[in-house]
Structures are given as structure tokens and as C-alpha cells.
Amino acid sequence: MPLSTLYFENDLASISSHLSGYVQLTYHPNKYTLEDLRTVLRHTGDLLLQHQWHMLLEDHRQLVLLTAEQQGMMVRYWQQQTRLLNRPLCVATVLAQNVFARLSIAALQHELRATGINYRSFGDSAAASSWILMQIGRSQLM
Image 1 (cartoon, helix red, strand yellow):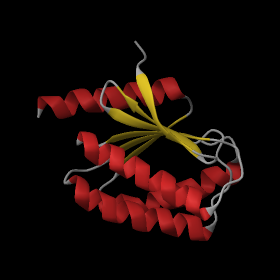
Image 2: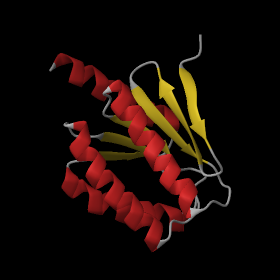
Image 3: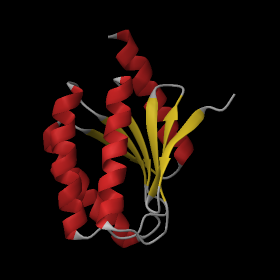
Image 4: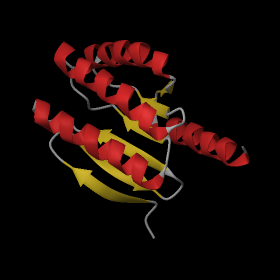
């Protein structure tokens, strides 16, 4: 039995639900549109709400640079979405290989920390997954 199930995929990313209780968002190196980003955000948020999850693993390794407009869209979306979740979102991020993409994500995360999102960055997916699983274990104890 697979540990995760593909929920949605487009040129920008694939979104999977993991049996352990989190959403995994894996970015692709493809060119994409603003509508592709909007769709990925909406499906990611819908999957979190559907399962009442608050854990997200984002794999940015292949992500290309985010524009200021794309960053703004992501900030506005996650500011709204965190209110709907009714609990802080925990996000494990696997760092992008592209240094400019890494910088744009760092700026985005800095702005979103004010919403209560708990971000942690990792160099590989195994470490990110371990941290997410540890957070899930802690939240089940509460």
C-alpha cells in the first residue's frame, strides 16, 4: 500500500495526501502560469481542510524563481487559509536548489511567520519528513 496518494498535479506541482496525516507539495521545474499557482494553492488548502490537517511538506528543490506578484498571491492566500484552519500550520520546506528561488521563498516565509505559520527548512526530504512526523506525534498528544 502506498504511503501517499496523488491528489492533484499540474505544470507547477503535484499535491499528495500522506497516510501519516499531512499534505506533500512537490514543485516541478516547468514553466507555469499565475493560474497554475492559484490552482495549486487552492487544492493544497482544500486538501488540508478536507482532512482537518495542519501539516504541510513543501519540496522546493526544483522550484524556479517566484516573482513579486506570485509571492504576494501566496502571502494573501496563506493569510486567509490559516484563519480557516483554526490552528497554526506547520510547514517543512526542502530548500530549492536555485539560490534565487531559495531567497524568494525565504522572503515569503518571513512575511508569513506573522500569521503563526511554523516554518522549518531542510536540505533533504528525509529530514523534512521526520520533522513533520514528529510534529504530528506532538499534536496528537495535545
